Length: 362
Ligand SMILES: [Zn+2]
Figure 1: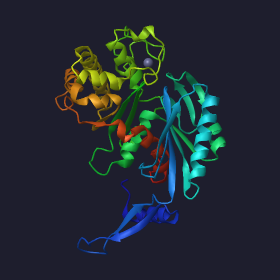
Figure 2: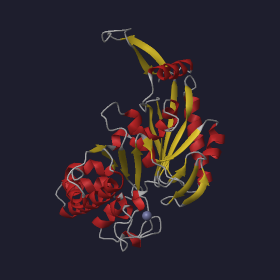
Figure 3: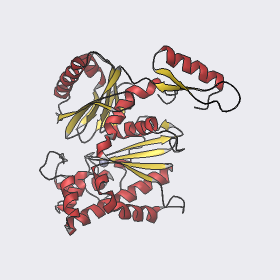
Figure 4: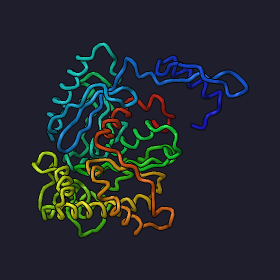
């Protein structure tokens, strides 16, 4: 945070007074002065509820303040009628809170596949859900009687990466690309989430790769998302133009991206070719992100990461093709597997991180 020693002491005292941190072991002195006392984030006796709303299903998990799973994930099909979804989600959250009444729930973090205004909690536009300027925060907060935080899923993933990563020197500048029903991107520049004047900064999923490309859920054609989403990959495999179909959930249909990856591994050349194409388009879009914001590290999340060993060469070849300098031709890329639940950890970070963040970040 770049604060002076005196200012740090004041901040630490505040956090201690609020019981958000506690003092632990005393370390070895590094020469002069007092021995250091280690400080720990107090994740005991309190938890947060993380919610990941996707076009297909909605997932709920209880975590500690650091995003560690406390209660396993439950999920149900997403009702695109907002009122009905809030009722169902509210009931499930209330049940979870009632079952764990001995510990204090700090709030509910909700990530959505769309542009949001975190201050008002409104969803400005969620193309895959067909929502435009809807209030998610207030009715859900009223239903569950807890604070609710709403954020774009890509941005929340980026926030969780900053929140959870210790050292490494890259937390200040990163991009998180979440590939699933759609494509969500979160950009962190100088340690802060990039939002823009109207909360749509970083919507690389809707930057066109080709204006004559397939129809996107947002109504335009040729968006990056229309080339790399799970539906786009499946459509390529089945030889369908995705524009002929309304955007439907891939997880609700019988054949999933996981099935396609399994087929590619068992020698289905068409499945492998579909994945390689996705890899190439993924690389072209990543090159746009690099050329626009030049992050120190790229994170990729979503089901496609299970095929990373199959597609990495295609991704990197496309990246190198579009690189403007030799240094940006081979960026550092880390995959975050589905099992790590990046979106739910992102939802948890919405509740937990602001208490510790610098005011500009929170
Ligand atoms: Zn689009």
